[in-house]
Structures are given as C-alpha cells and as structure tokens.
Image 1 (cartoon, helix red, strand yellow):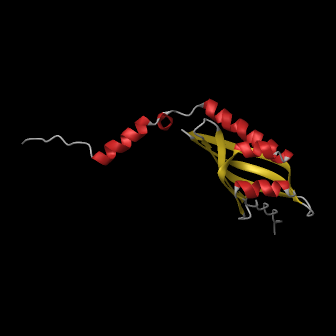
Image 2 (image 1 turned 60 degrees about the vertical axis):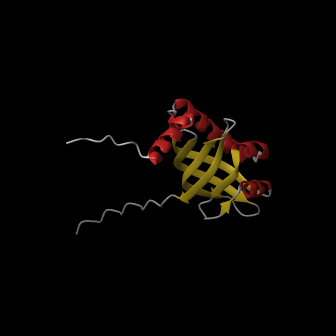
Image 3 (image 1 turned 180 degrees about the vertical axis):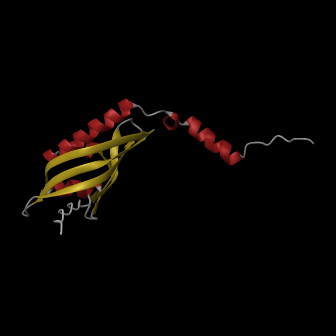
Amino acid sequence: MRLQRRSTPPVLAAAVAVVLAHPAAVRAAGPADQATIHDLEAKRQQAMLAADQEALRSLLADDLTYTHASGVEDTKASFLGAISSGKKYLAIDRTEEHIRVYGTVAVVTGRVSIHTQWAPAAPSTAKLLFTDVWTRQADGRWQMVAWQSTRQPEVAAAPSPRPSP
C-alpha cells in the first residue's frame, strides 16, 4: 500500500500566511493594553462629564455607532451634537468592568450607572449593562468604535416570610 502525501489546501495556506504576516494578529495582548483601555475609558467618561468636545473627537472614531439603552442610535456627529445642545452627563459610576484585548480590538463589558439631564427635563439615572469596542488605528491610537447598552433587569424583592398557620 502506497501512501500519498497530501498538500495543504491553497485557501488554508493563504489564510495562515495572512495571519502570520500581520503582527497584530499574533501579538498577545497583555496587561499594558488592558491598562491603556482602562485609562481611555476614564478619559472618555471625564470628557463626557465636562462636555469636552475636543477630547471626545479624539477618543471617538469617525464611524462610531453609539446605541443607547433606549434604542436610539447615534453617530459621532449626532452624539457630539446632543452633548453640545443640552444633554448633560451629571455622573457616571462604572461598577463593573471587564476588558479583553484581541490584537487591534478591545472589548469592554460591564455595569454602569449614568445620571443625565436633557434640558429642561428633570435629571434621570439609568443602571445599564454595556459593551464597548475600541480599535487600534493605523497610527497606533485607540479609538472607540461602538457602544451598546441595555437596562439592568430589576431585581425582584424577596417575598416576606409568611406567618405560620
């Protein structure tokens, strides 16, 4: 019985070559990348609280998709426009944060309480679960490309103990 040597399928070989040729694809993400994203998240929150348009312009990617828990979707331009026309972020309390970095992409998930006010309406607070995505741009800077949030489920109160019969 004669065994034949099989060749690697051309598509698989091409895929492996592309991955190996792209250093970011094989670079292991380390604690430094996670610390960088954590710091950028803090800067973004401070910029939102201060309505700092310049800082937000540099932190947010031009193709940003920002989906609020209400289902309203903003672009970078409409998000910045809302902040400049009266939406105020009064407090942002991130109670849980998990950062995972995959080469040139970072995914941040967690829980946050956001206190906002749309003039002239009364302030409101939303407790949210969120997913936030950052990408490393060609020039090495990280920018946020997506935000998606949903309201945290209400925790049902434990029933009162029933008196014994």
